[in-house]
Length: 198
Image (cartoon, rainbow, N blue to C red):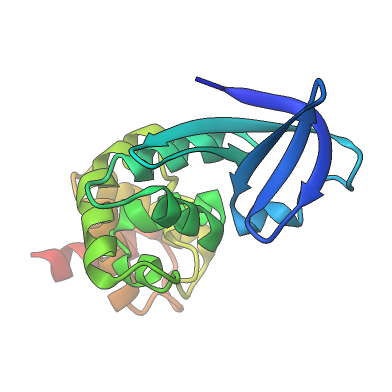
């Protein structure tokens, strides 16, 4: 198993690079989102890799950090998700956005990635929601992103609902339904949220 490569960046293609390590060129498939973060040709680069062995192919997949590699491995563990699909998911959004989407059960966001259909998005959420929630400890502040109202008040209210045993998705959906623009305290928002959940 090749865990990482450090060498001179020799070639950049549409979905792959070639890295010269000790006069041996390694062809590595990379996420399209990583291409614009690579150093110039001829410079040294380190890629954290996963080797995928299939009946008709042996390929290396490379990432600029260990977190992206770990997330790729998690997506590969989902039944019916191969390396091409997992790479498309990694290419689609930032790590924070992806982990947040899975933890919140946001299948619409996942299905918006080219090559990911609704059923695949649902399977990813079903199989990875708990794992990603534990591994990446999605913060209430991230769950409150994009919601109306004071960001601190919204994230504190979501955090309080999660502490009361509601799932991150239930907490976010409940707060989304409320008019928190004029709320003056977390207690007031929480009171309204609990009425809606009753």
